[in-house]
Image 1 (cartoon, one colour):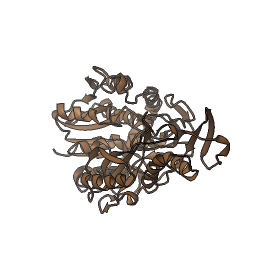
Image 2 (cartoon, rainbow, N blue to C red):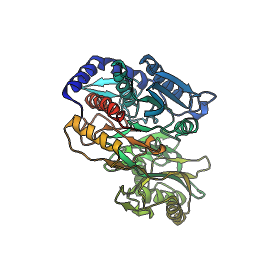
Image 3 (tube, rainbow, N blue to C red):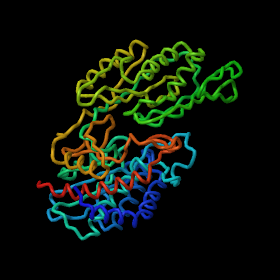
Image 4 (cartoon, rainbow, N blue to C red):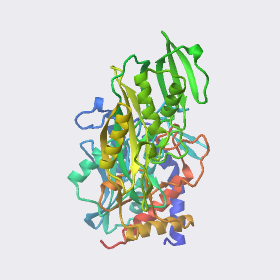
Length: 469
């Protein structure tokens, strides 16, 4: 699609600007921006961290020559106006991040650069891609090009939790003519599984032996690290793979598990640290009868991410099989226990089926179940001109021959009428073991991947602007 001379000019421009781009990514990564509702207030509905990141992102957009505006701390917009401002080709990226677990080998909010990789919370999800997308827009601005439609960057601040940022946007602005989000995988995603979340709660706990348990970082993340404090005799506890035992004093033992975490949409190859704790406590008979009953429920959920164990197995031709994971668990002061679940589901399943099956499972173990939230599956026509242009650009730049696909992850795309997730991950490429995934410890991204992504986005913006709307 792009001629050789244009590609050469783009490559030279990327080379010229790359060190600045890396610095801008570092500026954002170095801002902790997890949701903090305890300190939320007027103008910062998601807490001070997301607001700082939003303001820093808007500052970058302003310095790049866009018309940037903060909309009450919910969301930001930054425009390069086109000939027809009523039509907008938009990119939306988010500047909030998930919490950081204890397994990081560096400060997650001090970006480091190692062997061609950027390491830090948000380098991949989604601060690095945000900066790259801003510079893709900047490229055409520097060339003096006025497109037929406005280029708009939408800066999100609440993607990782409740999506109130995009809810605000859709209440106050017209739908984009077309929208991209750089928060998934290449080549191009035209559909997303449904996302269903809920919580199991134990029955009353008598004579409980669990003293403290608050494990996992988010409903949608499989934890790498987790620990529980339990009343036990340290000397009598056996060693186990991935388990560390520490004397807490007063007859209490800290049991810590080290697994392999990841995103809820991609449970293959993970090892859930909560499940490791459950197995250790059950295998060694460390809990009371009431606690054991709930731990058996947790084991039933966590051991089989296909959903068969809890009666929610399903599949379709568009999205493939359903998955379900247990992301967080916690103990209340009265001893009762809770376990979250997160499922990515196809068109053949529904909220009503989840509630029926999971309530029945809960009752088998003397527990209760409640839905937390549900977002049905989303997809657009893979043969439409936008998807066909994007897949063509990706294959043209990379020399590959890939096809559009659907995913289990949830992105901003599902919140808009005409949208797609477009990169930047290439899961078929292997990173070093010390590079962690999005939502995981030591989250990182290849600089070469980001450079290729920038080239693809520059060309994609031009091609999308050629579509007659």
